[in-house]
Length: 98
Image 1: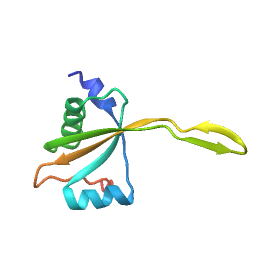
Image 2: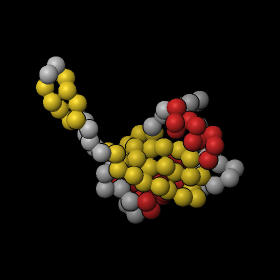
Image 3: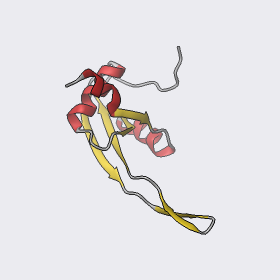
Image 4: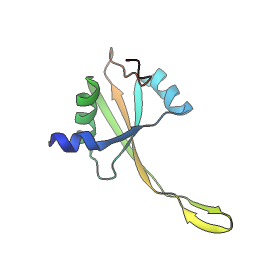
């Protein structure tokens, strides 16, 4: 796999109450990924960027939703998210303690 591609696969980590609960319970982390990213690419990108070992990846597409703003209809963009399960003994710290 191309190293440049692996650096672009992960768009951002998604931090929410649900993702924090899943991280504590199942050692899973949630990422927003490119729409055409595959499971092997996501696994390789997480292992390379965070220096951890991944045991599994679950991917799902979040559909676009219609919203109204000031009486005009619009739509939110669809996106893809990945739940990455790490092997026992590994974790990712997003707090940015340097």
